[in-house]
Length: 77
Image (tube, rainbow, N blue to C red; front, side, top):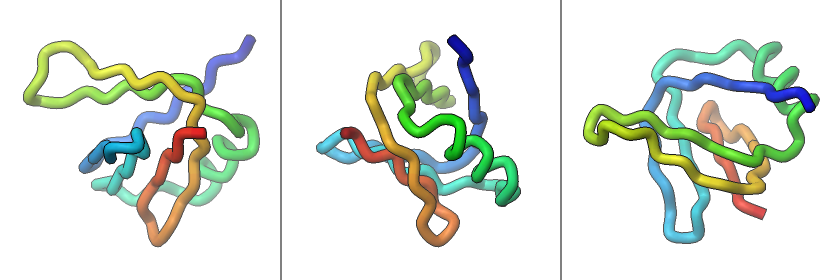
């Protein structure tokens, strides 16, 4: 089973319904994002590394990735 990984540096917020919103610091290329979305329709695990916590935060899905106005939205399904 192939594991795809997308590393995004940015501001992250997690809503009550477990929707994850990421505002990337650096602009992502359209090609890399489209390629990731095409091959990875469902995301099973999201790992968030923060400066505040020593251990990464793991959120288990499945999630569906969408892009809206440069902001990435991972909606739990």
